[in-house]
Image 1 (cartoon, rainbow, N blue to C red):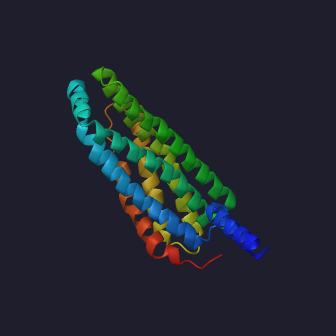
Image 2: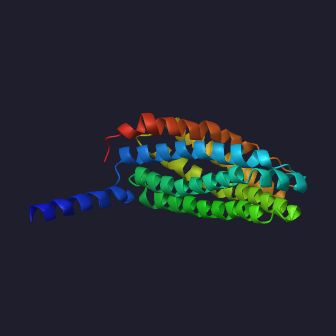
Image 3: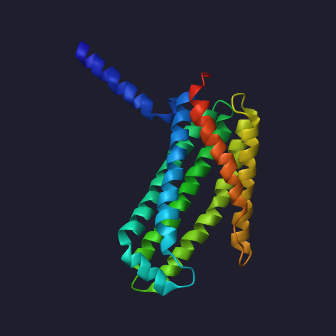
Length: 233
């Protein structure tokens, strides 16, 4: 009987650890901080290191040739982006757990907003996978790659709204420095401006989302250094 009870207790503990709704602020901070850090590494290596160097804008034939010659690198890059999407969902859950005591309804709305963004990001990344299948038709392949960029950049407008909501929750909280909430709101605004520019202005070059580097990087450091030590309930 004692063995059965111990086994049940261990099973219950594991189930509790997997239920993000029960995570403490310290656990939520650690999970989100590690998740965000992993996302930076994967996106840098996968997209900017594996995919972008193989694409020559305006030259479909060269792009198709380069991707064909470096197929494993390209596919590994696409796989890294899909991992980033999964981590987006994980971080949305962790930030819900972190801010649910500030405003449960708004925190839940923000989490669903990020999950929706992740879904749109997955649709965009599917265009990169589709491009690989279209390499025999370079023009269609390059069009699919361009579609990825357009869908991704426009969907970042939704991510920008998410960051503004999280920034508001941080400003309302008593445990996150106010400056971080302000920086995230600025980052979110930059993403929104870029999204509207890409959607409605011909030849628009996204640039305002670059402000996100400051806000999001600051959050990663705070989550991993200060957030993981939170003792609030």
